[in-house]
Image (cartoon, rainbow, N blue to C red; front, side, top):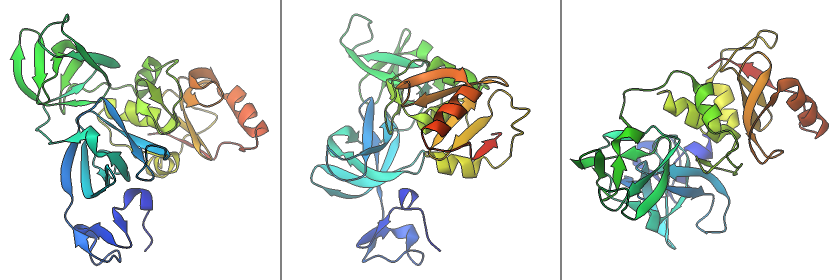
Length: 278
């Protein structure tokens, strides 16, 4: 059975040990867990700073590394399953996660003071490991001090409206492979919205379309429904309006669904392939 290479930690010479007997490889090994130690880091398609960014790791997220070469780690993002290359300098030792960032973006500080040198900014859904607190500040295992008001306990206090999360990203610049608050693509916006609601979500549009298999009636769309095109996804804000990160506006934008359908069809990408209800 063929496996999606975007989600399979395997190549002809090396594969994760748990794939032995399922995927052919020259040898098998156990991945080593690392954590992202910068605000966000690209997951690239090749071990080069000039290679395509296919996804991103956010601060605190685990990256299971199987190989290291040329300053890059090859492995798999544990949160969304994406396989690729991450700069080794962006990775460090993992710690037990206690909080996640609940603000759209926030700064941390080098000391428990807003006058201390700022670090970040850190995006929504980044993960924090508390080792100390002082007043209203929480110190992460990396040494960064976060304002507790911008954090939520890991596994608790999720929001319930993914469309509201998407709206918080309005006018965020479009970025291919992006899923941080400073730059996001269409499927990255959906992924971030779902994670903020405590819902697992795959990374790319075709994966999301397959996962959210409940069809929505295009004549009775409601807030939170998803509209898929070939290579694109948008989220309904109501029966008529969508929000989506798109390369036409080069930003997260709100517009009538009918306007988007006409423009995308005129550009040669066809009509929507499906309407889904997550």
